Image 1 (cartoon, rainbow, N blue to C red):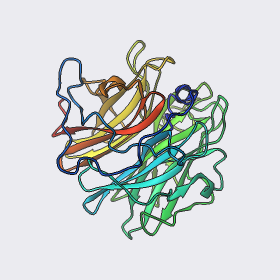
Image 2: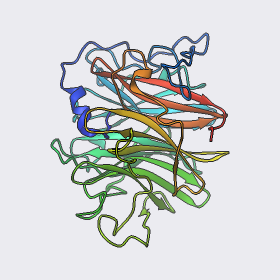
Image 3: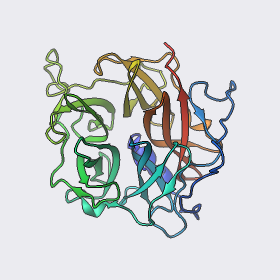
Image 4: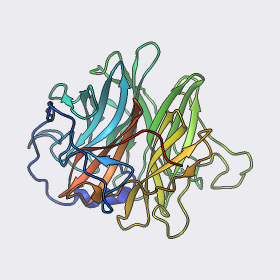
Length: 362
């Protein structure tokens, strides 16, 4: 979600255990006449992120289609005045996932481009079970790039690597690199089992990747890697830590204090460059029992992060009828944070939107 949640990964299995139900219609623009109405901020509803409307902005597909049970926001990029989303669609977990393409001029109303996926798990030579789009960008030479992660085992401990695909245009044809661009660390390292949910930023000096890393127990933390070409990556390594699990590399963001809402694991980093510095939205879990929420952290250098006093900034129940949320993505456009959330209602998922306008309170 579809995945990915990857990220409380075992949790997603719960959502997939129930029989599929008939899905909503395929993606169509929603209420083109006006921007959806925000749910008012009350003591029971989050005060930082405002959820728009009570319906998904991108629904799953109709019954019998490739995305008729789960869809998540995959990879999102704002380019040449439009939002481009490469959403994942799948019918089970873990099971093969395909990538569909939808666009929007304002971030609220979305249009499906074509009925078929533009990129498939079968297009990735090293994906054993599934491939999930996670980050997208367009290079200076107008090459479209998707960074994705694989799902390579159906039993705990899970296994994942990060890969890259390119295309001359958003609709493809998409071609995967022959090999992963980022792999797990050595045995005993903090990311020994999985690297997943990448978010890649292009800078004047090259590329920065934030990603989730998991050890053999499933504990996830957030790591960072850099690259001059987007293909060869070097994980961040603090020279002051020389013993496992931080001998080879180090996470830049770790779970919170015992008893806190994100004490068990932190993952799915979505890092944005803003006028105030770096902002990161991330998914955190308190324990193994589906206690999840969305958090916010800020940084001046992209390495050292401070948790927001507003945390958590989003709870699954902030969306009417929702029980959980799994994958999310984010972009910052025209002084507005757009947070796209895969929300679980009755064990199927669709994509909802929450936003915040203006600066981040200190």
